[in-house]
Length: 217
Ligand SMILES: Cc1cc2nc3c(=O)[nH]c(=O)nc-3n(C[C@H](O)[C@H](O)[C@H](O)COP(=O)(O)O)c2cc1C
Image 1: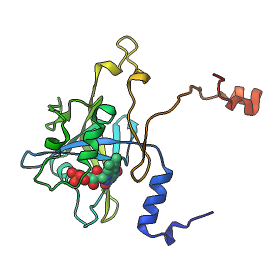
Image 2: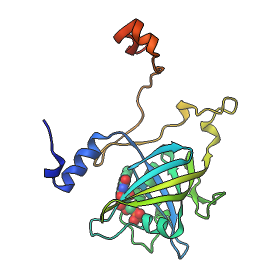
Image 3: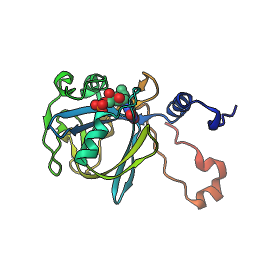
């Protein structure tokens, strides 16, 4: 089966792409409007793309009524935002915050989360989140009249002590389980892990396909 995207309606393109590029992590974004009101909303068109500079990217669409979302309005005006990663501790809050709140009403009051100051940006983060990234706008790319990409430069990272091994300074996999977005109303948790180093070219010459085998457990 093959689909030429030129012949697909926009909604179908969205459905295919978002159902096929899975799983996606969720950025629970906190931002602030010019009146000082904090906003929180989840975005799964999100990932990290560079470490020097440290860049994360969000894809934000317009609302179905054509108006822009509070998050992008706030980010455009303030040029700063925080990305809070979502695990079990704030998943209920994430669902509440995804509702279509009016701009003058804060999701935070309903979501049962606590805001805490950041260090380098004047926007609050979510205290209960396992990880928060302090970001400032690196670039905003308006792809069309319905979607924009926000490239955020990460200035600082807050990590809950429990997820970091104090000696190795590595994330403890059993303690960090961010949610994954699938499509529609579907989500997943990280499943079984496995470990496999990138094979060297010598290994491939020697072992052929066996160089791609997974370790038996
Ligand atoms: C898990 C999840 C992921 C979402 N991802 C996106 C996304 O990547 N881009 C987007 O524009 N909207 C996304 N949404 C919808 C927004 O969260 C929703 O439109 C929200 O009301 C926007 O709030 P705001 O107007 O306060 O910014 C997502 C919703 C959920 C529940």
